[in-house]
Image (cartoon, rainbow, N blue to C red; front, side):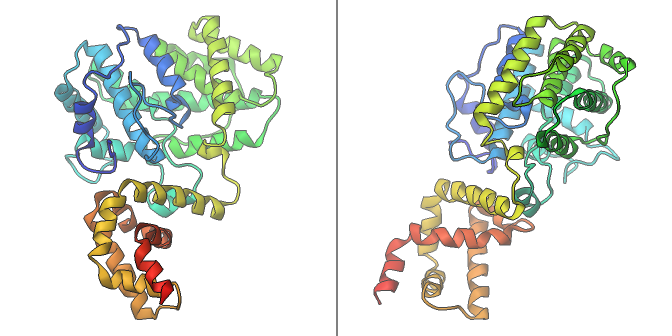
Length: 392
């Protein structure tokens, strides 16, 4: 299984999927439709666009998003360059992201990041594990902008920062106008704004009233996937459990006319966002904000459970070799540990986490808050040690 939290995952992805890539027959529109149905456009990926599906049950949301971004970038590379050379792709992708690593646009911790580091940085909207789990916004919902910018870069080799700024500005105008037209505002609207606010990198979200001149800035986008992406963001803003109103339909019709998009694409866009949200609403993070403390615990529990399940054998081996740690954890089930003993438990657990790449999440700022969840699962990994303690 590919582990996007460990070094070398991109090479493993390419080595395991050489005959698994989808062939879009040089058709950018087919590619876009496929990306849309995967949820990548909407900020929550439900599948990876490959012939044979990857098993993502044990992957976290950001890990799935990493794979989806890599696969989408590679698909665009193949469509533009007419080649499947993975080495050249990686070189071009790093070159592309290095343009974003300029003075005033420092996105990476190193001056020469590899592609794994670039992708990891691009998908994040929060700086540490506590903020990431405490928030209902987890990954960048506007990542398809990277795909659009990479396509433009491969075609022109111009600096992509200016292009990304233009796309962001157009997105703000579009979503703001769509929300101002919407006749039945809901809590979803506020969540959508927060989603965009957390995902924008070069501009700030603001609200403004609809003006016809706003449509003029969309004329600079001539690619079908650029146009459909803008349309999808508008329909995303228009979405409601209720039927779309005549005024809202008129706005989307006008947008399609200005973007020179055929009416059937408008119908497909509406149908896709409606079916996607209704089917996956309970899984989409920005719909499940409720109590933030409860959300933090639930998100953390899911993350830690997946990590433990995925690394169970290695973690069990490391624990068996830490007899003092197991003894202290067993003791904690029947009596309170002293302050010194608690320090020993924390230190030895963190030492184990250092030796397992996927568990370095516990070493990040705020990661210590997740240790109690890890401790809770240890009796399931070493049941005999705890059963013996109870028998005594």
